[in-house]
Image 1 (cartoon, protein in one colour):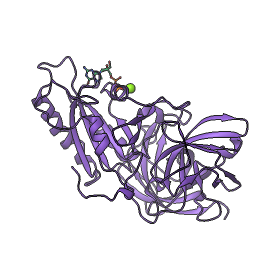
Image 2 (spheres, protein in one colour; image 1 turned 90 degrees about the vertical axis):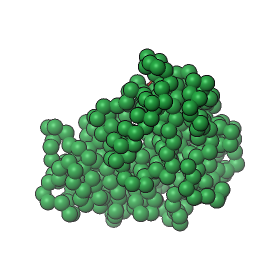
Image 3 (cartoon, rainbow, N blue to C red; image 1 turned 60 degrees about the horizontal axis):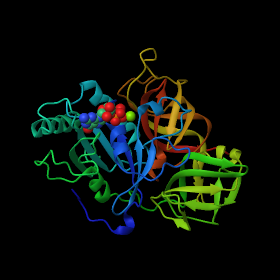
Image 4 (cartoon, rainbow, N blue to C red; image 1 turned 30 degrees about the vertical axis):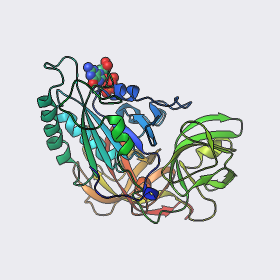
Length: 393
Ligand SMILES: Nc1nc2c(ncn2[C@@H]2O[C@H](COP(=O)(O)OP(=O)(O)O)[C@@H](O)[C@H]2O)c(=O)[nH]1
Ligand SMILES: [Mg+2]
């Protein structure tokens, strides 16, 4: 379903895949049935798949991991591919609403959608084309209508049995009526490209801290711009500059350098405190710093409110999740709203963060300028960073 041919240099080398879907729809089964490289230490629900021509980073995504700030970060914000598992029996209206909300909040960088309609054993007749087509239509109607037009450049529909791996990694003999690719084949070929031009210098977003020894840390993350090389100096927060000790590729083999659009394990000769202080983004020293800030002007859309907190007023506290970083924040001043905001409202406001955050304006870099807001485990809103006030002012 390619729309435009893409020059190889613009392609993302290691796309991220967020496997999303309601409980018991087959997310973990699909994740398990795709053969992956050995799980890197300290990373849960995440693994690298090598298809015929590239590596992909797969996340067995669970909204549960978003409900607390203290679980290891398994987040989809940096993923370009959304793999949705939908059971062939379909979904309730609430599930569609919930899923659409999650796709909007977490999936600002999604470019492709793969819908795996999971063929469950209990349904008779098995592997029914009719049921597959019916689910496809209802998903198209109930989910796509809730997402913005053109959110996905390509969409694929696959009847699959996640438990047996049929049409996931091997072609199913049970669905002769399906002439399309397996999930693994789609992952191999779906065009994913660098979405932005004129990107700032080095931006390596930390996904998690894998491992540490005394004064040495391995961080796992994604290079969103620039390149990273062994021995090259990098900046961590305002005060630390160090040289990269080692870079490991997805298969944990050492490499000299990595390019934009790649996940990597990076060893840095710094104590844990330096990692803590860096705000989740590693940058190039000296020039074009990612801005550290404590207050921003953001455009916020209120997705829903908590029953016992039905309106948002200045002083409202919640958590902001921005790239892979979560921080407590307070609605400070409303710029374009009246004195309060309720579900469905979009408005500009000033947000004050408890700690310094590294990010970009949305217009500079989507992945670093998009955020969502959580309160008591619920996504209450999401939006864009429009302006910020540097922390040292
Ligand atoms: N028959 C069949 N069973 C499946 C399929 N996908 C998942 N299951 C089973 O359904 C249950 C829930 O699947 P799981 O992958 O844990 O769902 P998750 O909650 O989305 O991660 C497990 O017992 C799986 O073995 C499928 O495509 N066909
Ligand atoms: Mg699961």
